[in-house]
Length: 155
Image (cartoon, rainbow, N blue to C red):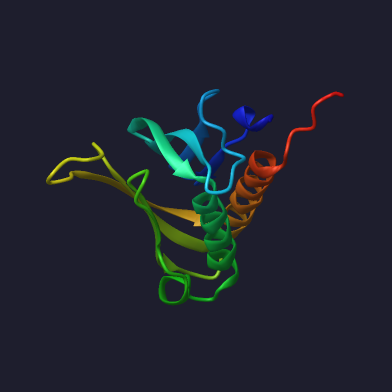
């Protein structure tokens, strides 16, 4: 259960980032099937940092996001072939909106206040190297594996 030190942070060389940062949550086991992890959602640009606190993200959504990052990195035109990943429970959407040989433009959208009748959305689009998508995919995959691996108790 070392997942508190893990993150799913996608970083741009230009100073932008989108992060899913775990928050300690001893009352909600995430290892159960369909489990959820408590995260802070970060949007960072060179001129601002916004953090949406305490969002519950299903572990299977983290796995879907990891797979989407890997696909976006590998596909020639992910803006056409890789669908957006929507995580309604956390109010998060990640879409791949443009690309070239080395970079993919990722658009990250967060619902500011979950449960609002007319939700306001915060959005950040930035270019990331394809290698960053691969690295973040591996981070998320390791996080999911850590979350879903049963903890052995001493006899």
